[in-house]
Length: 114
Length: 114
Picture 1: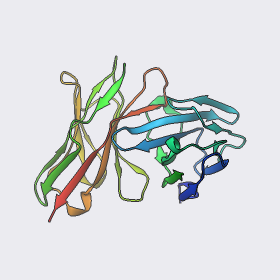
Picture 2 (picture 1 turned 30 degrees about the horizontal axis):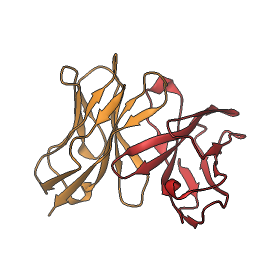
Picture 3 (picture 1 turned 90 degrees about the horizontal axis):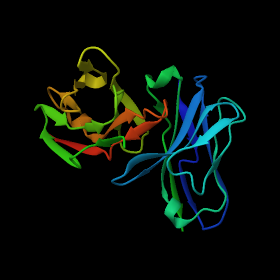
């Protein structure tokens, strides 16, 4: 089954404790992206990757890191989480297709930082 | 600046009645427009898209959307609502400056009552 998986689905942590949210897709997509969803704000892009070893900042990259060492994986790293990073996080992937193709989303990771 | 607006936080409709979820956009040139749906505890699922051609676009689950260039709108419609259509709906437009980035609206919660 074609899908994007994220782990963990739920995470409660404390300020300053490094964490990683994994994302994996099995569709051989070049493009991958991380979003955060906050009430009333829709989804905002954190980082994206056009292909292996190619990553760039989105609209809200502060406090986050990413890497793309393999085509299928795109982990999101919070080196020192803070309460304002409490949010619902989504990973997405797509073919390139000049922006004409839809993105496939993972099930989401709900993060709480206390 | 490019943007997407969903003017209604919530839309209430009775089962069997037609539904409309509104979306307006602001982007230079020809837009690529998308609708996604988010069911509780799930990721976003693609519904339909407008790239070019016929202004009336048909998508999944009986939904359709009409692209109106003069009114810069892309409203989502369904002739007969189902209780199972109750979910959070997001309109998105491709960012002209970054081919694969989506700019999302704030979302509209659709509640279909039996």
